[in-house]
Length: 636
Ligand code: M6R
Image (cartoon, rainbow, N blue to C red; front, side):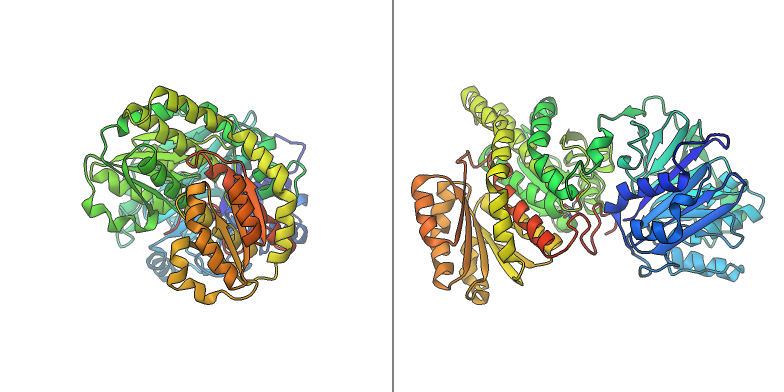
């Protein structure tokens, strides 16, 4: 995954902040993409290429290597999530060529790096890391030896790469520009007033500009302080050229067409404050508290997109909803909504498992791809494959113009604002709210709902921001109390039926990923078919029911767990007889406002988010940067 940043000003431009500090701050905004090592390369005002990098997290490395002291007018930076080669000083980016004139940062995976590395080593290049990325500066060096200009050498190097990459490179032989290229891994250009930027994600430069160009696959180019130049590399699509070709042949075959950016510059409505912690100890807690606003903005913004998608889905018989991680849990809710509210046959599938279902899909079917980042490679591939079969593709994403929306036939955008915490919270609630809206709109256009029922349903959706705010206010303290007891647990079960199942799955994922407690979600009815063997005194079992119907079905399962002295926590609707029974059966009862179960998931997930957050905090973990995880997964 990894995060990259590049910034270029004119050599005369002196900003208030030193370049080292600017790059450090930008990398802090990208830390969610990886945080095992960090580094940067700067061209100083006296024309030297300075590279500093180390294993470790940004703040510590910055102090150790004196990032804040360094200044210059052009630089690149990188925060790493290791793929090839473990976290170490030498594997940290940037990587440089043999002569120390070219520095490159890379996000992605170069699949043919071994072949390239052997080829370059035969030609006398020496390597100092185990990474796939290090071949890139050496390739640039090799093409320059053939007389190519620095930019042509960069493009030629890109043209022999196979795999996924977002690249930024600086070259002492062309010291006023940053070269960039994109294939699959995300990359955006930020257009400033006296500087330009290139980065893996917008928050990196949001403090300086809101004018962005989202780069597309196969695009290469460069930024100077006052120019953004983009080309489409014709022979340079990943995998087109072979390293076995003579390099001169590769160079001669290089062909690129300029890209007209006039309609591609977007002014985004995110503010710098949105990407800051704003007084909260962690982004995750801030983002949990932002959910009323995120849901309200999404409901206010999606109406016309939802209407358009519903019109297209009207004649469709089968809908597959795909996603990964939290987005899969939202997909699960989406499939239940389409089946139960709109009467359309629908199932959820984990994106990486989609290939096994493709053979039976075709025209007349639809795929809804759910992805907050819009970049998850497994989900992107699911969309691509479905499209090839003539399936209608719809995406639900939080990032405008990202890869999955761009490749889909239709798109609905959630309006959650930037989500920095690695654990998804506000993007999940906005996804389920958008899907609930879509299901109702589809039910309406299909005649499954009359206009009175539709109006009532939408009115209930619109009450959600207030309800979510109330749930947070009422249960944050209780979640802290439950979390205090959870910290000593090794394992937990999350059980539910109907909508309660995907909420349980999401609750279990939150506890796993940030509190490092093994947690499994099951349909409550399945527990007696095996899992209950693990239950002993004080084993945590968290039940979720979103309606009295769901509660009626899990009641006997609660009894079974209680009979084994489990520590039972129950999230249930505040209906007198339900709460009365739960108070007798469970150790902890969290009664929430009774809602239409199709509308309720966005409210019923809140206690789970809070319990996981406080458990992580009490265990001393940083919930924003869980180990081994990165927010956007662009490798399969
Ligand atoms: O950007 P996406 O929604 O496609 O990301 C999918 C998953 O990688 C993501 O939801 C992941 O599971 C989060 N860490 C969940 O908190």
